[in-house]
Image 1 (tube, rainbow, N blue to C red):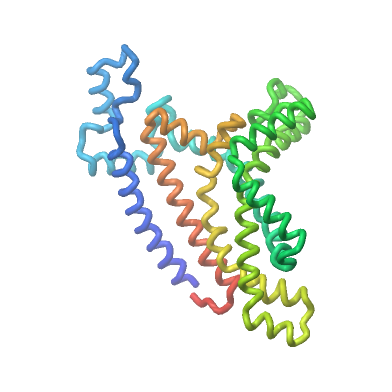
Image 2 (cartoon, rainbow, N blue to C red; image 1 turned 135 degrees about the vertical axis):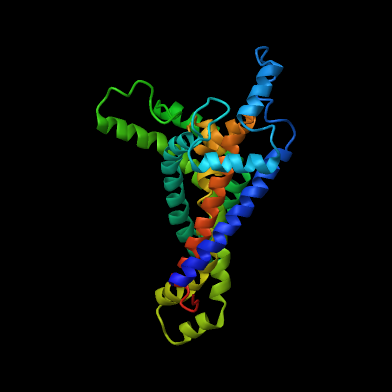
Length: 319
């Protein structure tokens, strides 16, 4: 176990190194110059541009810029070109805002998708299967922003309550219990909207995987031995059907950054996805590169967790 963990960590560090190089090169190969932060500002004179390039080592070769950037990143000295705030501090604040949205959305997606998909597979061709298939494809087809606006209009008109932002304006002086309930209410709607697409897609995957496993010889053998339907479906079939979803579960961590850009923009939720979008528009290269690096770290952590979960799901796998 320890040797496997050690080898895996070394391999992922090497992978992370190459990913950092590739992402750095791609950002600098994009059209435009990093020094074009605000070209329409009349106060942004050529002399200021030159001082800007020298301050951030943009007049150095790319490999030197790479070393300076990651040196400053790991020492916490990287600052945003947009507002001169430390990048890691900005990302941490937005991370704390995105985390509850991500956790609630993920819980809703996985706890609803599996019962819906399993029941659709067990009652294939029935009314429940046809209905769940119809609603799944309906949710897949409807654009997320359109569904969000329809739901916002419905909730505001029917219940006369605010849904935009992380909290109701002016609630800061009330009791802590009221503030907690207000934060939960503001969290509920964007989390539900963020989960709808995932529920629709994941439930279809669960259904197809269960149908494939239910047709295997060992499942028919379990039925022939007289085992109860629950033992056949949930002990023998479901456990083997879980293998592809272990990989999918490990790859949901990057959703902290890029999975909720539209939802965060519509609901004015100050999260990481919205920050990444704003950084791209402002050509805030330090923020973009740092988010790319954080995304790569999350992917590698997710794959590492998947490797360990395989041992729990499939006892045939040995380290």
